Length: 207
Image (cartoon, rainbow, N blue to C red; front, side, top):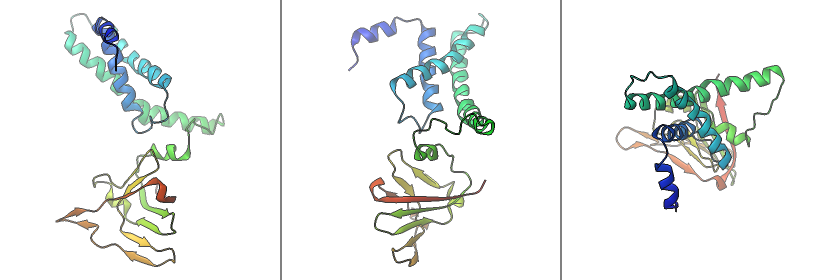
């Protein structure tokens, strides 16, 4: 539990500083959503401070005539915009530049699975999961599943998967179509696969 004295000290800080820290933390969460599970306390602290600088700069540059509520809202928006730009543009282009220049082919991603978690799943056409008993589960029309809930699939940070299974393949190679996966009356059938039952994962992509 938090020490009440720490809460009192935090409440005593100027509202501008509280705003900078709060908006910086929210922006950090947004910038690294889905890929924070390997972060340490230092990553959270310095990520919060980095994005909080955009709120601080916004507050510093606003004219004194701006109402404090409007200023606070603009400061929060500035931090959130910085987070979105970092995740969608800067981070991606920086990786490409490092590879293109030959500076580094490593991007500090902890594992290949973590790198896959960062994908937006756009361009995915098929997904196949090999189970530990030799069977395969297929999602053969992943492209058209993007608009479905949790579509076309969800990769969990622990290695588990949510997917729409429309085809099964036995260990002997016999393929069966799964009926009733997509139903207008009952809804669409989503299958959960625990990480312990997964041997391999194959994803077919189009650029």
